[in-house]
Amino acid sequence: MDNAAPRFGTDWPSIRDQVSEVEWQARLDLAACYRLVEAYGMTDMIYNHITLRIPGTDHLLINLYGLIYKEITATSLAKIDVEGNIIWKPDTDYGINKSGYVIHGAIHKARPEVSAVLHTHTRAGMAVAAMKEGLLPLNQTAIRFVGHLGYHDYEGPAIDLSERERIVRDLGPHDAMVMRNHGLLTCGATIQQAFNTMYQLEMSCRAQVDAMAARADLTLPSAEVLERTAHLYQPGARRPYGVLEWHAMLRLLEAEAKSSGFPPYWV
Image (tube, rainbow, N blue to C red):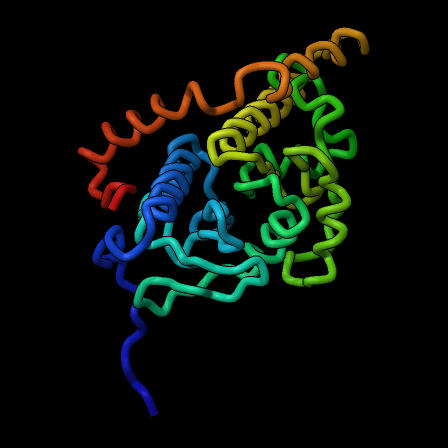
């Protein structure tokens, strides 16, 4: 019987010289996104997942199941196919979260224009996911999602492959979805866009929970204003989301890396 201790360390040598420049850049971008999700308070211990397609391939990058987001680096990311088969991962007993490829693999497979998918279980996101009315257009940030937000009914933990087609159906052409009684999901043509969309969706949920907790009368703009505003906030109507902000966000991570005690995302 093998009594060897499980291998759960995090000190892996960099694989920068072992992968293509395209894959390494994808690893940098995804690792940075994990750190930003943590920085803005959208994590759930070791749970949840963000995936990014390696350009020019059918392979996805995803986090190891067992690391907190502050520990995730470019090297620590696992490479899988859309069916969840592990192509490569560091020398460790950590695996991947099955829900990661059930949910994400379905979207990547059905929506080839989607490069990145984010899924969260935040306090505000779960609260709004439990509300019958869903996300309300209470402010400019939330209005961005009017007519551009899917809803998927809860079917239990996302481990059943048959749920894939319903996830894809309920997301439709949108880049954001409320998974009822579960959490939030966003996707995008780039990791920058997908992160920006999640940030805005999360802020909308937090504002809604705060406004409803105040027990004040709430006001909503007219249908005409909602439709026009939502259109103006779509990626095709203005600068692609996330591009302008991304380098500033990376500078934030670089500054925090000097004092965090965790390895920087770029190793």
